[in-house]
View (cartoon, rainbow, N blue to C red):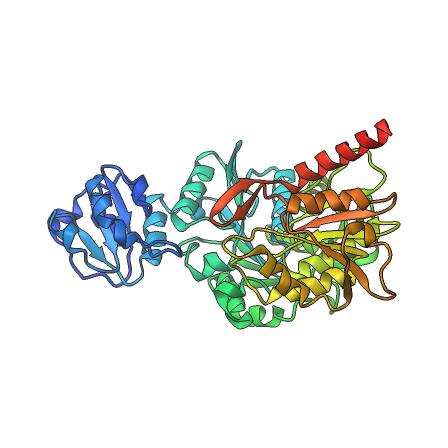
Length: 512
């Protein structure tokens, strides 16, 4: 594509560019200088850990045909390489990528799902509904990116704009009719979805998270709100009416509203009795076009809201009640979301991604439905992230559990013991014990807890004290198969560790 055509998509450029620039052929776009090859257009983006402007000369030496930058680079200018100066190179990257890949979101129906909790499960449900209706859906989210038969790792819930547009173009090229995308607050704040055309958007809920980035809950919400203020009047917005922020979204968007929830008679709501337990959920959903029967293997009352949102999106897309019902029934499980680890042991083990106070509360409520005896919870909080939620998660853990083991999550560059110390500040309703073996004998009215910083040892300890009827809850890591310690990512998977410990314990009992 010609540089002149690409540059024409940018904002507030000089009215004219030198004629010899306009005819330069751009073979691809890169924002990482290591990916630049002859013919690339390099966009210098200021990141969290490095600044692309420092690598402009490297990109030029590798063959960049032109550079988009926020400040002029004299060394690159000496080589005669065109430099297009913009106010915001992140926004420029999004606009350039959208144009380069031919506006792919206009070639399929793009559904965006945002909110603190429930995005992943809802996205999987919607994908299953689309497929039950005969469509072909791509998926972009926290766990992975799914394009046709290809599955790519997900470094971010919502990828950088260039990677996002490339994925959408690949989906459209493979015949996808829809794409279901989790849209993070980071992505909205950083303009990663700029240029995307959404057919529908959904809001699950808003609870505390990511305040290390957004600083305040209002700023966090305003980032989420961008998804809805960008919708045109012929689009659909599905909004959870049970959330306190729902009214602000409804007021701010031009889109046609479909409300969901349990109270105030929203458009999409349960009709009659809700059956829930170890086998899953079963209930009928009232919609503006009739009743949808729902049977789902998902467990936990929090999944009622996820299902209602999925039904709302299916309704917004015009799918039949039969397709919506069948899709929900077909969606068996989401990796790392109330995922059971079953080796035939007489106690339950579930792994979940819950890493906010609200998500942990909902997880433990769901686990209580499965347990006939104790809830044993293993959890930690991530380093270099929102510190204010740490004591709140500690308080939630002792309220909802019978035994708690506080451990590490992804400590990153923080001291794990310092993180745990901040978690303990909220555990005033608990009683710290010296070892898990002492945990069954707490002081009256206080939840026993122990501190085991090594996560693998913490999981082993939880499995070691589990008795028939107990449920061991491993919270925070979910689908993740790594742990970040310092600046190093090592292989670690709660599911693998739990399975190994269960087998080890079973073997020891067999020998005994």
